[in-house]
Length: 190
Image (cartoon, rainbow, N blue to C red):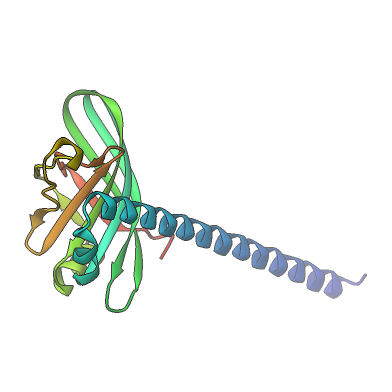
């Protein structure tokens, strides 16, 4: 083979390799997005079962965001991370997002939970998605399971125009804690 032909063959092989790698990245991205969508629907169904009125709140808001989180606390410090999706109810546009949290205080354990935000208007939804959010305070909601003779209080207002539900494996959380949590766009999935 002559030198120009060898170079052409090498270039064709390099382009084929890059195209295949791009296909693999696209497939991986689509799979991760699909897993988040499936998990989001499972979380919403659990919320609707625990708090039926939440279905209307989610459907009638300007949008919503659903996150699946896992956290660990060992002695004086804890952290957690999660992923989710924010949805514009008008356009149905999805924005995939991540979250991280840091906690201080005495404790030990592993906690899995889900967080659902409902946005009253476009401004707070867009701010959450485009600017990311950091929560530094703590909100607490009273919730009792129906089988214990109480009523569910539902969502807690965490800022003007933003409502939050927190779910644990046992149902709607009795205490909603958002101390030291940051939400931001996922650069790899959008």
